[in-house]
Picture 1 (cartoon, helix red, strand yellow):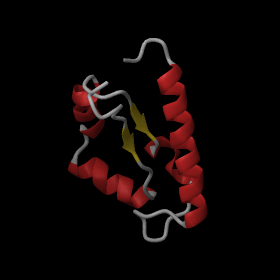
Picture 2 (cartoon, rainbow, N blue to C red):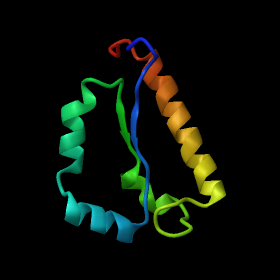
Picture 3 (tube, rainbow, N blue to C red):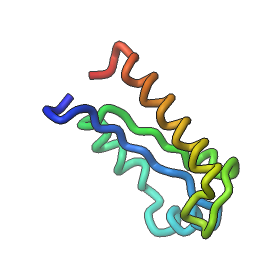
Picture 4 (cartoon, one colour):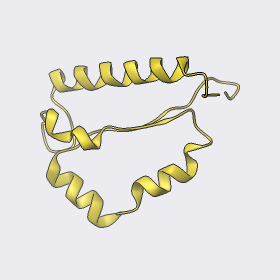
Length: 87
């Protein structure tokens, strides 16, 4: 933990078409994140579940989907904080 608290990396979901563009522009995104994950307190990639949410414009979530994602992130952080192998 740094002096200000824990740092968690989260990749938020986007619409399939946006995800295709991201994959085309930077196919090794997750590999690059994995390189810096060790200096954080964890990485949570929600993009594999992108189809479970509704988007206003492909990049931003509708309010109800935003609430669901926020709860998922909070639950993940809670489980990471309790994990004995985490810093």
